[in-house]
Length: 240
Image 1 (cartoon, rainbow, N blue to C red):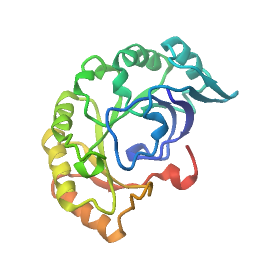
Image 2: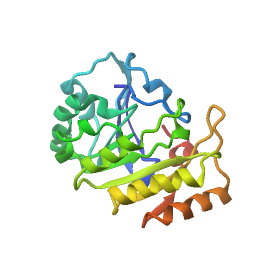
Image 3: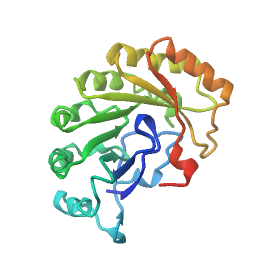
Image 4: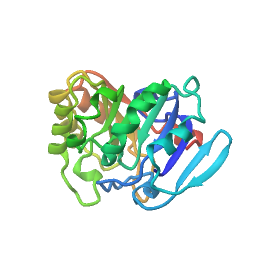
């Protein structure tokens, strides 16, 4: 684990709601705009911002140890647990033990994922209430990798789990990339909404202009029934 904390959900369709965030360490991708580089490394402590005060915990945390931290929070105040990263699905065995316990605590489970690890899904699907899946065009990758075949396998593996997709767009994101992402989503998950998220400028990656956002949203809308443009609201509010 990298972090445990409560905050407002700042991205996607549940934006503005209070969530309990469980941030996992490690990721199988390297994105140009990554805003949590400290979570990429599997080694390191877990920072737990608990109601009774902050503390640092050594990794690896066991399921029972993590649940003791979760028990410090109220599911009435935080109706959703957001499993984020890094990439949570790297730890699918751990999640298989954790997710049923979170449900017993009264939480709804919200998986934030890069949507490339379809093999991790089968044992977890019945424990997920919502999946927020990133779509990653080659321009988002530091190595230009094309992960869309993995995205297609992931979407096919989700079954009936509710889903929306998110595509981070930067100044150099083009209509062809957005159209391809939207087309993949429309073919494999036709009921899913697509959120275009203007990148929060970082490491030389610049955000698109307002005119470009309108152009990209129009391109996506040719394929997907519901398209929204939502920035990282928590960054604007100065929240974690």
